[in-house]
Length: 493
Image 1 (cartoon, one colour):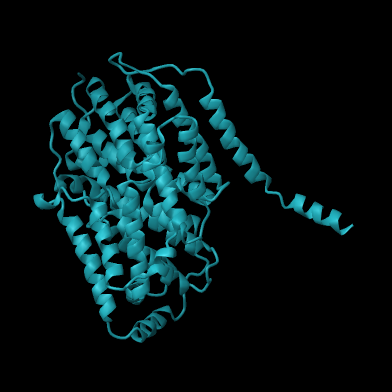
Image 2 (cartoon, rainbow, N blue to C red):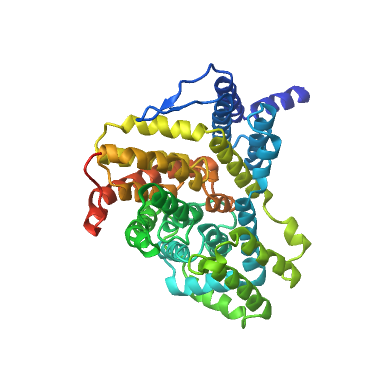
């Protein structure tokens, strides 16, 4: 009798949603992979872009991974492993290519960023900064969120948004601990950590130091149009958009994830007491701060000092990891505590991104999408490009999304009377804000480690935030940038 009851209980515990989504991903993969050849993409000049069998395979992996990531049918790092495995087993790419991307320099940059976050926490720098911030912003949860977002946004002006996310993440963990919900998910926790990821992306568009995508886009722009975009020229046009998104996102979270508590009574006084308890700054804190500041300074100066430009950012950042172990700030236990699920998540994102790029499946998608607008009004064309980049940047590296779509768009632009500048800046805006999938950017993955939200929740709020983003791009193209002096139309070619 008891065996029958146990069997019934086990049957009732079966997660049918997980099984259905697991099968849905597999079905999508096999249907796309084994489908007959798909038609070529043809650009306005009549050039054909063939979707090879490998390209179709890349799209199949792309659909499976997207389905499994969104619905979390497996741990997100394990889904990333499936990306590499499927590429090899179905001969979409060679093993040395598919798996090499799992240790791409960008992945090691994420590793180094996470290590910096661990150092902030272990040395006590995180608590010192968190308590000082809380003393300034006070006890209102709305102001705490705003303060957190402003600090995150400001830091992206001088350092890569991935490093910013890794730096403020432990700070926000301390702030959330004072909220009084332990580790349980709450609206405030969701807003704090999802908001951290979104704001890091939104503000990273403002300077060339915020992310690599800006430099890549400017390089493409100069090569195709012959026009130069300076560091300050980019900031001039991007600052109103980036900061508008920061404050709009704050309003968005105050509406859709309004904190359960309006205030945390006694928080300011408690923060003062805790700050006093920390005592004077220790030698370990000073040493850690010097190492971190030096690395950030060198990366920031790369845009201005020619001798530093050849140095790889990942190598510079990993010098800090080596030094943390050399001077004894970190030990083997810290190395074993690194969240490898997050590292694997980003590894898989790099692998599928390069797969779409190398098999030219992404270019096939870009041409098919953009030619839909070859006879459209200039505004519709610009919004179409911005939307395509926004979708692609959720699945592949934003650098790749720019590299795929911008050249095609800039070639089409003269035929529609669209100025190249508005295409460049609209693309850069949406490339910086992958709000829907965790794999879209490293800050998304870092935020996920807080365990405050699921990938499904991230997608749900991200879809709404993406609508706000598209409205902001529309207003910028129609009103803000023309007022600031940006050309949006030219005589049709």
